[in-house]
Length: 399
Image 1 (tube, rainbow, N blue to C red):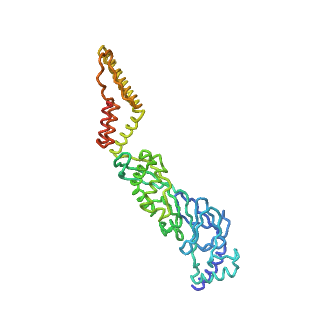
Image 2 (cartoon, rainbow, N blue to C red):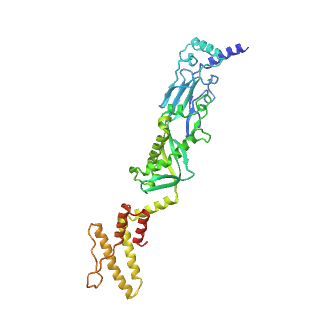
């Protein structure tokens, strides 16, 4: 009985497999799917009879549709046999006897009798396995990363180590589908009845590894970004520079984990959703903002406003003493501002005389600008620290 059943099954299966297949992507594929199987369309709107062919046997002459942004890989008996990287409709062709069909010129006896005999030897089943899988070649979004504790990097602009807790996301791109499939896709996703290899799925066995490798590269990526002269050496620009940060992150990941060279994937773009600096780094950045605000023309304007406010305060004390003080203050302020303006043009300051004074006035005291300039020179020579410089600057400005 078993012998007869095997023979009947072999002949029936062979005849059913003469139908030409039409394979397309499955329905409702998520954006984060990377590899997923091509599925045969046996019926359409209830019409069609190609529903009893053997699973995982693609008939010669079958058509496979490849959408834009996807590639197609075909397998035979577990081995990659072909790859298609351009969109369009493709005709399947294979020399295996099980793939032949009399519908495509194989002849009724050549395509069925020999196949039936081959199936008979395998107990009525086909002795070959054909599989077709799509590979997503688009940017694969929503790959998130984040740190539970602060990461630390050497910041060239701040001149010290900086730290922050950060989180963000990156887009992944497959640049070598065959290498990617061979190196990192689990076998369960490239066999018969395989599911969708979704990189963002909670139970995906690969996503956690990629997450850990990205997080492990963040500190070096931050350091590379802030020490890159093309980026202006400013970590404050990193949140608004998605491509620049992605370049730094992808470079570090490639150096440490060989994503492109050994896995066929790369980080295409990245965005930082939040950066929470630790207390010392936040204080340093606050000081840098103040220094920026006092640099160049803004600093001169600030000094003029400070002098004007001092003169106004002196005049508001009232009485003759106050007016006399106001007059002296105006002359002193004029001297300071005049010196500052002349120093900006490279000329030495001109001493000013008090109102009604007969003898030459005493040499004017160093202005705030002079004091800041002198402190800056000491900082550049390494004689004082940044903290000392900030303190001297605040004192000179009366802050």
